[in-house]
Image (cartoon, rainbow, N blue to C red):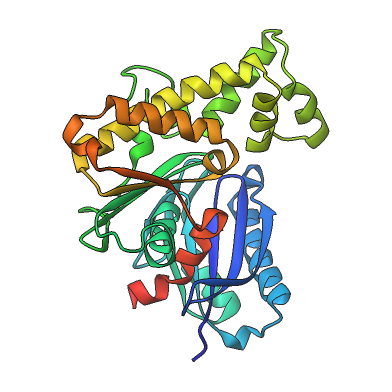
Length: 319
């Protein structure tokens, strides 16, 4: 057997796949495609296959050298059957990823939640090394978290532990993609920030974001950073509000779980230092004195590769 596995991070906006040396967590090479969720689940699956094949090609290795494929999917999964049960941010339900990909590649496929596998990556090779009790929170298209308890990933009684994006921060508030109202994800995710900024633009408010969106044809975290750096009032107000809500979610975790460490990752955290800094500062201020006294909050060391490295390790967890 080789030490190579494929890790796939299936997110709401992009699919990232990489060939990983599972002995040391090194990403040999990687490939990325837009998810294009609006085109339906069959196209998403096809794009996963294409991204995997591109990563293998770039790494200059043979498929026969790959031990397994692991997928971290944004949503609820059946780990045993390898089914993506529900992914509201992808508008995908009951997708048999394991069966489809095993039939195509003829190697074992394992499926986990995207933040769960990113947490696994950080636990083995990233910011979580040396910690037994910590929480990883990733802020991007949605918001999710992974929990490490006594050195192991905690999944809960039905496998859905860590859905911090769906704790209620405003009872009866904004509609979330899950169908509920007032979820943290509806206030502090990139999707939520995007909606608020676009609503302001629609009302006629001026922002430099409108110019960069026209150039790129889509909305990205880097556009928000560009606007913040330019002193844009709309971007500043929206990011400050989102950080206020995220800090409340972080304080809830600190008070309730009392972890040694919170690891923050995802596109917004990586792109916008201001968002990270204000969220952390306010979270500490809102937390009880004792649990907040020794809490450490750090960025994900593996950055964009947390998910693919963790996904590549799934065969070690589920064997």
